[in-house]
Image 1 (cartoon, rainbow, N blue to C red):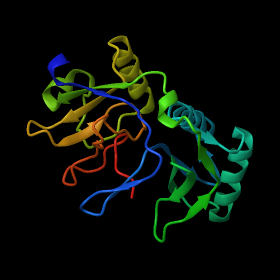
Image 2 (cartoon, rainbow, N blue to C red):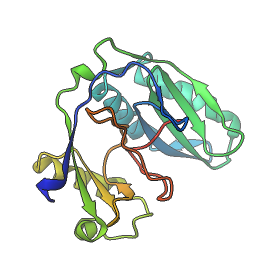
Image 3 (cartoon, rainbow, N blue to C red):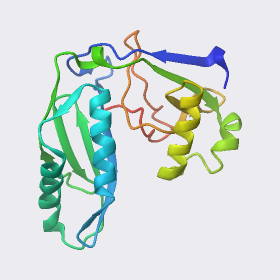
Image 4 (tube, one colour):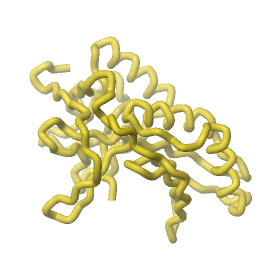
Length: 211
């Protein structure tokens, strides 16, 4: 990991979404994606733990206790019975939403509020390194479009933490984003620039634009 290409991201206060010159609206938050199958939300408790941890790191406060949140989610998904769904649970600014992975979009508002301190209470700035696909190969041994399993992401996160890094972003030689390795967080640089995937390079887990 080259120190010369390391980017420090400070989580400064940004109380509202921002619309850029192209009409894209940017926001900050975190998300978890899980599978609903045969009337069961697979791994929901683990996903909720990670989502709530991400909320705390971003100074977003969920208005429901974890168990109440779990009940609300299951109640919202029960009508879909045995249908298999990919569900995205996201906390962005002042809303915690549940988005079903098909059309038309299904959304359940639960409620999240941003604390007055917002990003100012974050324990430390993000430290992110950029890796080329060749550099990432030793610990990213699969096509870049395939997501890493949770265990592999956890091992990668521990490896990054030992090097005092928060996240690694894999990029092509011409600096198009390929993938993020570990986190499910939206981030914004101290210069006010949002990190997002190049539109031609697909979805980047963890560092993304919010519409």
